[in-house]
Image 1: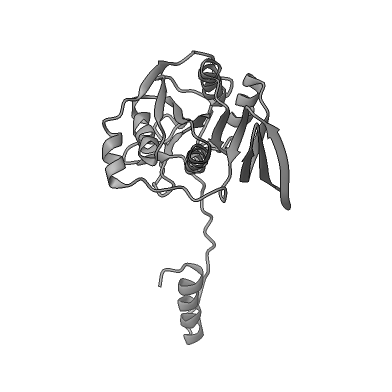
Image 2: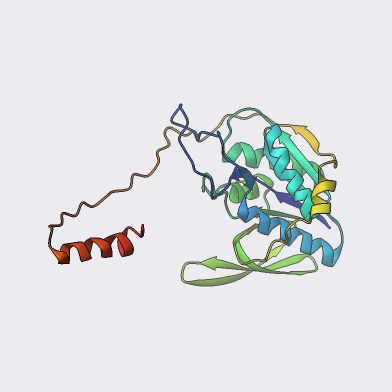
Length: 248
């Protein structure tokens, strides 16, 4: 089975994010980048499918040279091959989907896994764009999946419940939290991944269809409270600091 898994490079969710000088991007100084957490579920599902049915798992990402770090994490988890579609330009979701589609057309995967969305832009666009470009069935936000010869039976999250659908392969699956428990790479596998080759492919250029006009950090509104000097006011101050502000 030919399995393709799409991987994104995103800031660690625990990182302190600041807006860059241009007001349209984040300041990368001191920010750690990781594999998009939803993509970890996609990688794990691809590996489990391979372990049950044989085949190969290829991880692909679109980005700069720095994205090789996340591909090496994928290799350490167990994927067989890693591909970097290399570009130095600022790109949108369509650029990513179009380049993954071009690679898929040449390699004919039986199934393509993605995370439901990347945690940086949260646009949730690439899976559906990729499906349209490849004219393949797509099932999004999948939290449970079984494979039968030639088809996938997927349970997906919908508002207020679950929905079970069938898709004929080849198809595209975007993974939701709960689909599986991603494995952690072992130290020997991490060391081996450092020396494994990563295929580089030149990106197919296209104009961005979406652009960022401004990024802002949310402003926390503070409610002012005026207290007197009575003993009860002191007790109230202690309570507010402990229960509301949670600083003591």
